[in-house]
Image 1 (spheres, rainbow, N blue to C red):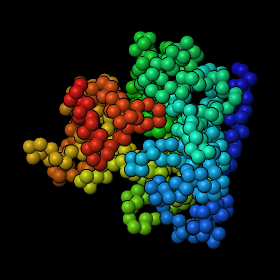
Image 2: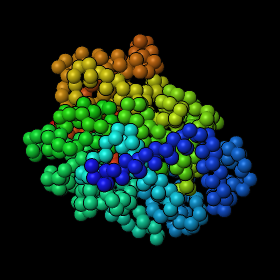
Image 3: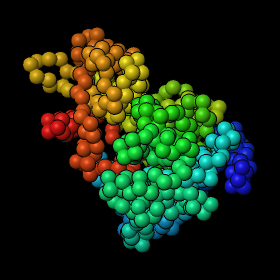
Image 4: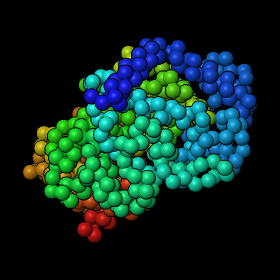
Length: 500
């Protein structure tokens, strides 16, 4: 065992004790975070506009600070981006994380000197937690690859602007610099397909132990390795035993990954976003990710089924229940106040508090009142694929409200297979039963003959990759919505299918 490996185990033990300390008193920790946020931002423009100096309780805050999304907060963000100081948080941000919004165009999310270290600490602690639980630390001596956006940044009125993953690339600890891949030059390649080939060139000769990235793009990297070498990824990288991912649910991808790798590997799920690093998986055999309550983020939770009410309830950490779908609302040391990031979560545990990501509040199907969410379609297709020994590369779902010939409306599932079902009709019937079991409203609509059972449209190989390329979002941190309440994605996919 190397000195680095021994040191990692010692450090992991220290971090575990620190984590146990704050996670054992969640309400008190969140109260401390809340008071610190209010105190530090009192003299900002936002703080003065919302009378922070008179806020003495969460109830005061709730009455003075409404829930906002990016568009509603934008008047303040625009002042920050214009170069003004003390708008949302004292001083100016260190960075702007640029993200693409569906309604707001490009978003500029501030990252401050207080919030940036929390991104780095959370990523580090996720790995240390894994080391402490499993005792496995040999991978710290192997090569590690992080499939991410370009680290190249531009200047925006004196503040550096880039993608979050590219910004974080500047903060890889010195003790990991020799282990990290790809090279700086390769990481700066903008074209994703060119970048993947360059990454393969660099990694094939190396002792890869850890691979990290959004599953859909890591899958593409794995497929290219198999195509080039004719070997399973696990044979090419015999010491590859840890996959770190975030951004989307891994379960629909897992069978395809195991097929490509040739064996099972451990995995760590992360819940990072430009707005903050919220949670990470701290136990290999427990469902859910540990919600980070001491990371400069004050959390509120709105029941998803009441989100669009005029005055929906805003709950704090001590008021949540296991299994309820909540919209995640945050206030942070980056100056985001009662901010709706758009994600929905559910708690799997309250001792300690652990969450799963259930979808996006704007990504659902309720064209007929069914309100089907991402978690439900992912679970349904996972179970159906297991029963029929099907491998799913990618999928998305959209409503079809105006089918030809006067048919009943239906949900259309666009699926790209790694291994197709032997009997497509049997697979379709099972999938429909599984989603009916997940969502009682959908089941009622089928039973009442308001909707007909789902329809599957097969997407050709690389069809989803072609779709992402069409909309300019191939690679990096870009994710395909699992479902949508309109036909925008479906219409583009139909054109791709016709042209194949």
